[in-house]
Amino acid sequence: MKTHETVKLYWPVNHAMLQAIELMGWRRFPEHYLCNPVLNEGYAVQISQELDAVACPVAYICEFELLISDLETFSIKQSSNIYHQELEINARNLISLNDAILGQISVKRAFKKQVQNLQDT
Image (cartoon, rainbow, N blue to C red; front, side, top):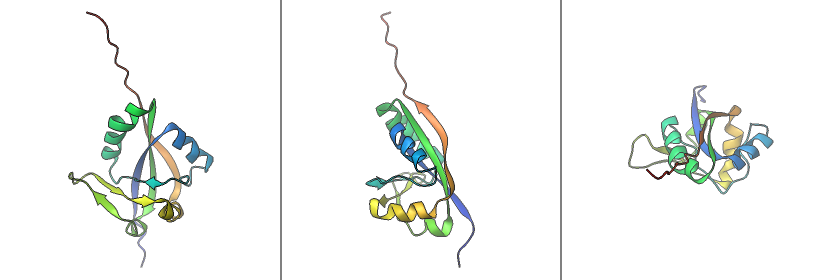
């Protein structure tokens, strides 16, 4: 029996990926070789601030929702930190993820690249 309880997931993306999501009507993720949405907003923030916002002018955190019963069909990977959990979704399984998304994908947060201002003192 399927439960109607839901879970929110977060995927840090760059501007190009965000534009592609917008072109998909905010309901699906575009074809991608690997999708690693995370289960914790704090972890998504950390990824955006440490990696994406350094490599890109702006990094975004997309938020979307799944039924918990649908979440259980995907493999969850955990790093050394108990709060750092992410789904490992390859291109083949991205269709299943897209079909499981409830409602629309939204932008939860955005981070601008920090530019250091070096001055002679």
